[in-house]
Image (tube, rainbow, N blue to C red; front, top):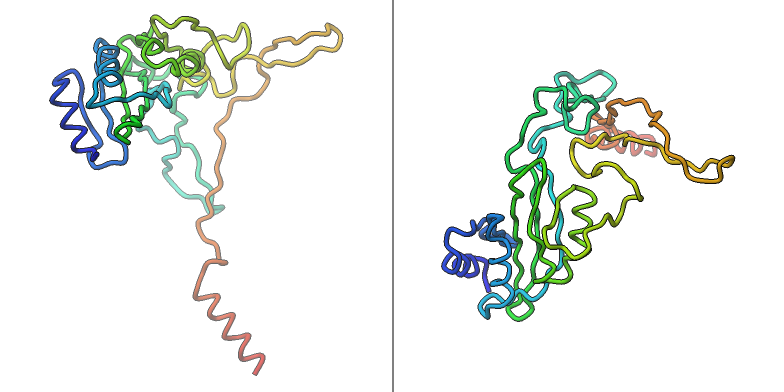
Amino acid sequence: MSGNKLSQQLEERFGDQLKVSGRGATVLCAEIAVEHWLEVARVLRDEEEFSFEQLTDLCGVDYLGYGQDEWETRDATTEGFSRGVDALGPGRFRWKELPEAQHVENRFAVVVHLISIRHNRRLRLKTFAGDEGMPIVPSLVDIWNSANWYEREAFDLLGIVFEGHPDLRRILTDYGFTGHPFRKDFPLIGNVTVRYDEAQRRVVYEPVEIEPRVLVPRVIRDDSRYKTDDIDLAAGQAEEGAG
């Protein structure tokens, strides 16, 4: 079934409860207000015209700094390098002191991928948590049990709280880990260094010793190996020499 047909079904069934985008794309996307998240999800699973039996993926998204270019440059150097001019991207080490460190509306989102085996089609759902300070989204575990570990991962890495989850614990980071490492304002060097201390015979946590800096990617602006004129010239000279 085409994406246009599915988008028509969604709009007729849900009206203002969702907003459809991506018509003509491989996967249709429906943005749902967080207060309708569970209601719409249950209909998508249970009603025959949709029958999205499986949740194949769920993840969190942090839109802090969305659309900013970390590597916008003013001038190219003779060495062929570019550099981060202002280092204003989130995750840098003075982020909260910068003017950009302000409230971001709709900062945290949850994205879900669904599949209907019966109708052989896919759908992407997205909702935004209302509160940046404490992002809360209702859990989908009671509707699709496969959401369980995905929601724990999003909670661990981004700090999104899934209300109603049966066992919302960290799943990837260590015990006692502070912060959420996939948030854009989490320090790129981390907060602590972990090592095994031979004298104490245990793992110890120490302050990070890495010096914060902006890495410089190398950009090759002119490579003679790919100049067709030079290749043709060299080939001609070789033929003349052989003659």
